[in-house]
Length: 247
Length: 174
Image 1: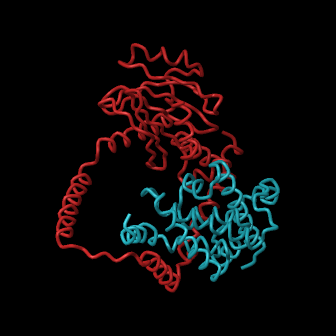
Image 2 (image 1 turned 90 degrees about the vertical axis):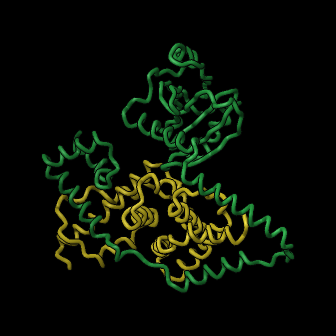
Image 3 (image 1 turned 45 degrees about the vertical axis):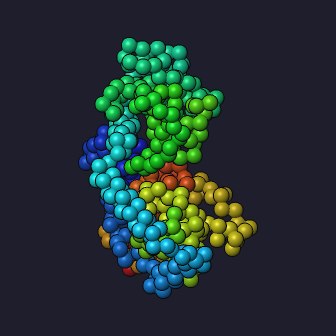
């Protein structure tokens, strides 16, 4: 790396946003180059100068007035109901059961929750370890047969280049205690990992979106397969991807 | 959702970020009264859209709405000014590489003034990064900008601040 490259990365370095390889490389360069080291130290001094004295706090009057307005909105007149005591008893019982269920569910994360966490880590790892693809190819007829013999199912591989999602390859991955297919698509500089594996019980379900560690996820079940699309792409475009894929 | 529960959930998710919301609005507008108006409006907007919030990063979600509220307020106030026409190149020109003299100690009052004078596009990035400690990715989502733009604006904003601080030190002014 020359000084020009270093200066371009110096902010990411100061802010701890660099990957390990670049981080180490910059560290090495700074030890040897006074000019870049000065640029680095100046940025550090600048960041250090921004202490909490720069932060404005919300005035108490503003907080009060917001709370007041919220209370007004939420207590807008509603039709008065006269509760029968038997209804009340039933409602209390139902609420108790619900609360209990909620409590139990909170304690043990659902299997979907565990799976989602696993899938996001897979996505992150695939980008970090530079192991995005086992079979780099933009041709669906190359990617699909590649999975034959490696998996006990055949993932549908669809080219969406004309919709702006370029298929760039595939990879074997592991999630939910089984090998899964990971199809890799690209839009601009964003990668989409589409994880495909047979769904439990073969149930069909529509798209569910969620966000985890800043990554968007769209999940759906179709044709006996479970699909998980993960990306740092914005939610709208990722959903577009999901619906294009299902067309 | 029951209205009461919604309000309680909303207050729990959003009100802890009221200081951050005000801080951003105050730096953007550079005056107390406007900042208060914008925060009040933004929080009510947030309440309206709260069903679209799914427990992700509440602070980023709130600040994104504050920022949007600020820009629509600005457009209403000065409709002639085209905000999208912010030219990176022009702004790049005056932030050439600062001389490599080491800045010893930065005068905070001076820095406050320098930050206040930065164009709003630079100012907001500095506030989000240096004062609120958001990651690049979070800043990109709050400000609806590509990650690359966030990085280059942050670099230019810092270049400017460092250059000014260095020049001041060299000139021997306080």
